[in-house]
Image 1: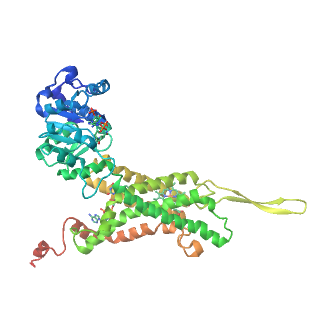
Image 2: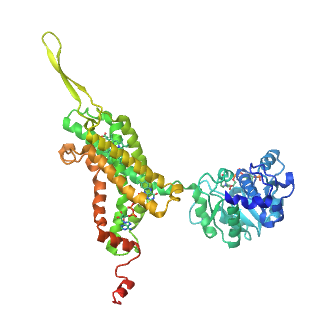
Image 3: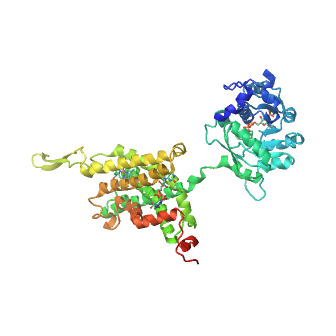
Length: 501
Ligand SMILES: Cc1cc2nc3c(=O)[nH]c(=O)nc-3n(C[C@H](O)[C@H](O)[C@H](O)COP(=O)(O)OP(=O)(O)OC[C@H]3O[C@@H](n4cnc5c(N)ncnc54)[C@H](O)[C@@H]3O)c2cc1C
Ligand SMILES: NC(=O)c1ccc[n+]([C@@H]2O[C@H](COP(=O)([O-])OP(=O)(O)OC[C@H]3O[C@@H](n4cnc5c(N)ncnc54)[C@H](OP(=O)(O)O)[C@@H]3O)[C@@H](O)[C@H]2O)c1
Ligand code: HEM
């Protein structure tokens, strides 16, 4: 908001509550009105026209809202709150060198186009759906076609009327600009800065096609990671269903075992294993990348596309994993009891009683009194789960842009890489302590297929095995050298050896 003072000093009349006092109609002309660079016409008295006008007035601009009918009392009342002056379209355009076109694309050809020639025209429009194809022209290109001598600059469309009125609190403060006229873009950039936002130049007017698509994007960087995690979940769910329900019932021949465990127990175990696998999949691509760099002896050649894509989705995989681990921890706390996970509790006490059924019959009944204390294994198992969860939360917090911005590169890498590895190993130990007594002895289905806590460890195990050689000092030093720019067999290296090639 610092930049807002830019114009306020100059105008000296701005009311920050929004009831601006430099509207000509109500209060006479402001100082800005005498500086032609500070006079802006806004075409359209709708939501966006009013929101951007209000913001411009706060930034020290003299704003004329050009309406088709400036005499409507309702519109007059609304415009009064912005501090701008309501007038006819022609009058507004004539007074200003810069015109914000805050009307929908469908109405562009109803505007007084001849008056717009030679002006800087800011196209703020958005689309309701992505329009693509060989003959597609963005709204800004369409406007430029209508006003050949105008200097169209695409901008502001990524900010909603709400964001403009509330200081850019909703979403990014970046305003993307595109246009073929450098001088016009420079003026609009100044305006953007004065309003408290950051201009980002995307290039020529053709880039307005991409800028107009920005508000329509639906989390593009999340689609693939979500699909990957969902795929892992479905695969593991089928495996668990086969293992706990189908296989058990085939073995017993009864077909009445474990069906009721599907919604909670199966779900919790599958979520837990998906989380552990996904965590390992955050670290495996970096390891593959390290081996490729060692193999090629340089960091300057491109990784295969699949690896590049995988490396780029690690943040999303990590955050999805954090969500799954959170669900697993909550569900587990809710259902862990000596009855559901007896093997992590001290032994229960069992009583056997002879029960007299009638004069001739007695039966032996067993009464179990469960022990609520964890055994050693239970203590380790749960504390490992809790520590892993805490570390993962730290990783998650550090990836928030506002937090990342406060960390040095070293601090961020320490949290993401070192603490992340500790979290992976701790979570794997949590799993090992849960099932260590049968980890290598017991097999599930038909005594051949692995059980959940066993296959949960496969990806973390692969990651650790791949990591160990990289920790050896000669390998580590060599990799560091490569990452600092050394190239095996390069010209400079040959020269150093006195061996010009
Ligand atoms: C909750 C959560 C949030 C996450 N948030 C983010 C995020 O915001 N951004 C993000 O990018 N990722 C994020 N991740 C994913 C992951 O934590 C990071 O990508 C992490 O930095 C990967 O660590 P790495 O060791 O594989 O890193 P890399 O730097 O890719 O290293 C790969 C491997 O190369 C080797 N290596 C690297 N540098 C050197 C060196 N100088 N010398 C020798 N060897 C070296 C090491 O063996 C290392 O294991 C998140 C994960 C989780 C769980
Ligand atoms: N609302 C947002 O959050 C937002 C965000 C980004 C971009 N935008 C863009 O800003 C532009 C305006 O959006 P808005 O939300 O302000 O829409 P709106 O509330 O419907 O206002 C549009 C205004 O255009 C004017 N207009 C000029 N010629 C017109 C015609 N022939 N028919 C109808 N209206 C005409 C009208 O003002 P007069 O009656 O005074 O002439 C009308 O109030 C659109 O291009 C939109 O894509 C809006
Ligand atoms: C406070 C945090 C946590 C608690 C209380 C907790 C609790 C539990 C419990 C009770 C089980 C046994 C489930 C069962 O057998 O039905 C379990 C299993 C497991 N947990 Fe956790 N956990 C926590 C955190 C984590 C984290 C962070 C991870 C990894 C990312 C994780 C991964 C696993 C795995 C892989 C299993 C084995 C699943 C199976 O039985 O096949 N847990 N956990």
